[in-house]
Image 1: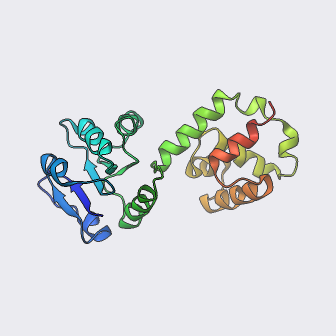
Image 2: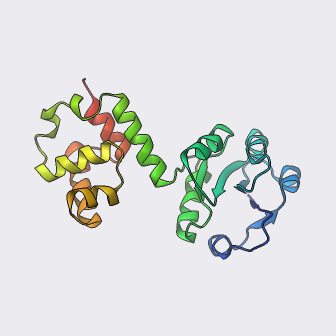
Length: 199
């Protein structure tokens, strides 16, 4: 397995080298010629037909992640539609880049957290949102845990929940951990599905 970084920028971004010492920096035409099924290609959004490149690589069985200097939901949609399995800020820390790499290598999908929050909130609202939640599901939660659970289900980030409730992000995480345990779920998506059950 080879990791390719498809990047034609003039400045080197050391975080990529810190994350992957064996990363091979190549131009788009070169990665098409050399990448094979099972290789990983990190495609940097730099203009041009980056979505076409992602599609061609994905059709060959190459695992594609997209790096964007200005990530946003519409671009993420383009990336995943083109066959990418990961979408992340180009200036992410080496630790985050390695996390993306692990998820993609294991055939998972990695979304940048703000996009996941937005996706979760959209699904929850489409399923009726807070007014449609059966309150007996929330009976085992404290009032603060209920507030956190519903805010997170509506797509708010931990930071935003903390600001709105006047608590720290650490406290939000603690409440959210308690909510997950009490409701028997592992993540935000499972939380909204649990809250939406039997409507």
